[in-house]
Length: 418
Image 1 (cartoon, helix red, strand yellow):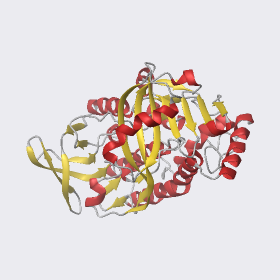
Image 2 (tube, rainbow, N blue to C red; image 1 turned 45 degrees about the vertical axis):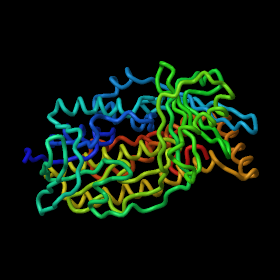
Image 3 (cartoon, helix red, strand yellow; image 1 turned 60 degrees about the vertical axis):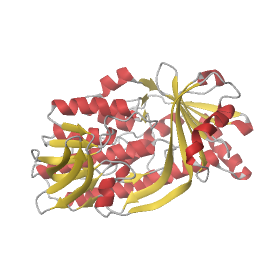
Image 4 (tube, rainbow, N blue to C red; image 1 turned 180 degrees about the vertical axis):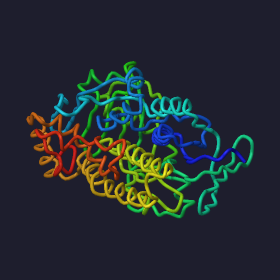
């Protein structure tokens, strides 16, 4: 049996690796198992808000990621049927350290976090798939299949960061409460000069048929174009329909190169608990939202970061295990009260069918365009996902700056746009 650790994390995505790095910096021994043979580079969320940048800087990896990705301070909204386009720019706000969003691939964040975690002794094993565990009063044994056959890994705690279809959550018998949307998202990475068609570096496209989220991914011409289609359409032929949809987004132009495409199911779900015995959940394994507005990545990451802080304190004997139950309650509250309503409203606005409501939405967008605080409101909303970090000695006790920013009040704001 391999050497036992304090924590065994399942999933080497950005949440898993950032959670591992945070735990390692607190002195915990950590091992990470990933069923794939390497860090996956599939089209996923790639925009990091200021509320996430403060985490990356505190962990010591922001400068490295800034050098890989690029900084963006503009957000475009387009309503083609009304001939409307606007751009909101984020301006510096006193009390906020960042006035930009970072565009960088999730695989890069996971890779950089992994390299820093490995320097602190974190072991990352690829090609290892967990298929069962046994729990005892003081430890948990996880059984996995890997390149060397069957292995058993012992740890004090098991953390599932293995996505919305989490094996850890299912093995623990934890329900995934909520609903699944009738549409599927198609996320594509494509080389195309979207700026020539009036797009900003990050964009909402509001249309009852051709809604989209379009964002620049790097400085070499790679963009993300994500749109919805009816999930009743055969998933096997989704790639054939990409070109049909591009006809509309690219306004008839054919000078594009599809780099990758990935269909995925849209959920509005949270685990009934994020702690069951010695099993804990973070990231999409804990809660999954539709990606409109980028709140899924932000909240999933913060769930992992808060978990790492409180679990590290439990391991060191600074906190009682009951703080893990409070962690579960608070992160579920953040999801259901903040993340899910805002993301659901964004999705509604992007695909709204009713003409009268679309006209009302347009008025909201025009008001946003003329509001000098609009950029700050967009930027500050994501700080609401931090929530209560649960202990006075938390590394993140001062992470949420909204009480210190007296010029703008977002406490009663329910969404990023409205």
